Length: 590
Ligand code: OXD
Ligand code: MN
Image (cartoon, rainbow, N blue to C red; front, top):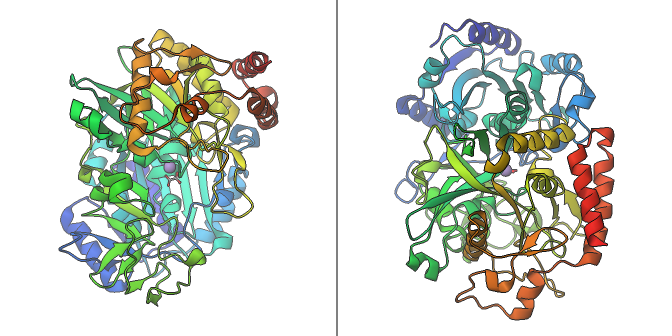
């Protein structure tokens, strides 16, 4: 498929290490993918689902010990520990290569190595980057074909260029003790071994599009972020774009595919999805910040996804989708998960593979589907996919939104005073653990810009890069906001309805960007008063609203202590702008 010398030399090296019986290049054709689906069905690696109800959909079950990203086994092998920074695992690259070469040695004997050329971003776009993933898993090939643009067109685009990200995945024996997800940023190389689960093995996603790409972005003057991108259309037909970063399980996919409340829908408001997880952002020729979604599909959490909570996500999964670790409804060979509806199938196969009769499941918490079970759905299936989804130039971003799950601290929404303050707001992002884990409710976890597990270099340098981007953007910089959909009252009830009603907050955000909405300056930034938000038809009492839109100085004083403790790990590397903002917040709260 190619005469590219760098590709062929690297492939030779990997083949002589892994020793596959066969090498198959993925050309991206439907015929080849269909043949692979057949082969994987025959071997039992995937199961074909009901062709009438779920055309082109398949089911896959991973090993029980291999159901999530493994942050403790994920390494950033930069040249020095300091370059990787205190928030990443690190090992000397030479040492790690030697260790892993041992593990990979002969790992593909008796197996086929698939060569998957893929583009993150529309093929040929100035934003886009090319990777090649070598894998011995058909499941990975089929997922990559949904999540990225794969095949010969990508190799043609690469031509003789030596710049591509070298990705190697071997399933080996899925041994969790020998599982490694390793990024070598300086070599644009990713090595993953002993896993077959999504985020660990679909190397275009977190490993490349965030960890390696954030490093490349720092070198090249752009940004790779854990952000959804949505377009909000007003009744005049104008569309403004928002990029938003929330930690995992805080509703990025839901916000990206939001359906406005009825009265706003009737007026003509619409939301268009550009991306639900990752944004690559560059400064355009006009000096504004532009974003693309480098992915081509959604790797979404299934449980909780329903017609009510996210109609558009569910609709996206109705064809050409791969389901992983959900339950099978044996009555009609479809899929089921907790939260899909209130009727667990009587005749089901739970995610661990046991047939159950609706009484006792073997899984923890008596769940049919694994809590991190997933769908891999083509973005083009999404009813609200943006017409700009394939635009190689991306979409101009008007607002950046950070958010987390905070029961008490953060108000519903506030606006940062300026870019530097906004970077501080992102750098101090935190989210509380949920009731799912006993004894851990309300534990604050710092997750700057939702990038803690995904930043490919020293987080303090990452903050500095954000500040530099702001300097380059100048007065064209998007405004920065913080939202919290998860504020709770004294009884632990959510105070804000969330979901579609979040649109009311998005409208205030965009109006602020255009200087059309009012706000009050507080110690932490600009807050709307209740009267600044359009709350038509919303059943919420004045006292609740007031609390949602208030700043409790005592609670925030505690927050300062947490921030200081977190920042201490960066020592002198913490940028002055961030330290200044902390001092300012502290002074404002006095
Ligand atoms: C994801 C994650 O899979 O953030 O998107 O964990
Ligand atoms: Mn994510």
